[in-house]
Image (cartoon, rainbow, N blue to C red; front, side, top):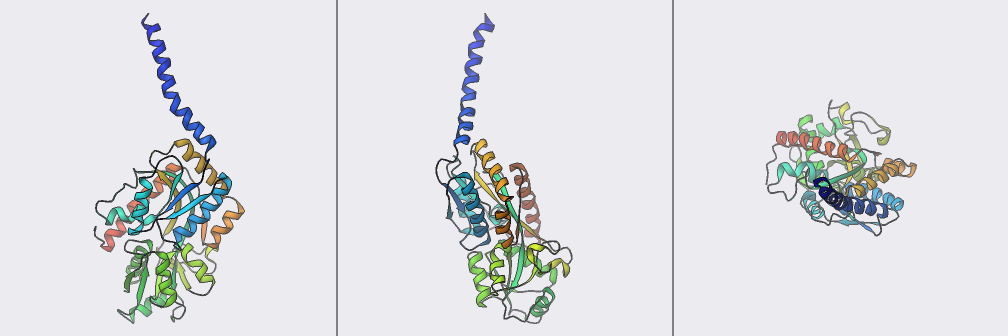
Length: 327
């Protein structure tokens, strides 16, 4: 009798548990049924913006829905990441990675309004790229060695433009000065676009920033590239030498991907990831990435999470070396 009494209860529990699972699977099957918002924590014209728009356009084509980019720059990407965290986790909001906001801000900002490891679903990677060291073309500098010598001979007169305190350009630029034993005046701008424009205009003499923000200007002759942060020379960078050829061991590789608000249905996350993995391996996507000095990247959501976690640890070491303090 006890067994018979429990049996209907067990059936009821199974039905109750299977309901949400079935609904989630159905949601993924029909997903997406309307446009998707992509929160961009960086300013227009930045590397993250350029790479994110390329990936979003290709992903949207395959999914059959438009992905609308919503630039929400501010506080080194923190503003956009907070908006993303607080968005409805229904699969119709994605967030482009802002490495500064994910791996730098936790070390330099007090009361960060999100936890980079706990408050987001890690959906998929789509690219990797190095940073490019550029100078104003009017500067009589054509190599890393010459930049070091030029700056050493002009203390206090050579400006380094960055996208802001704690940005990739700031950390990489400071690491370069430490490795090369020279100094420049740090001039932080409000985003990658303005900092790049400053070097083009001659307000600053050099910058080191993601290839996606630099390569079009380099090809157009508005900037002169004298090095990159990949470990060795790469076809992606043409004849630009690796900085490591002058400063052995100097390297940095940035990656780009999509996040989603915590709680986004797993089947939806998996569908986006699987679709993006197909997209990045198409000749069209590879060609577009190559023009930005980037290569396609794939991996599971867990591999993506681990990559960010490792970068968070490594960045913490660099922040400590540089001496940045939490604000």
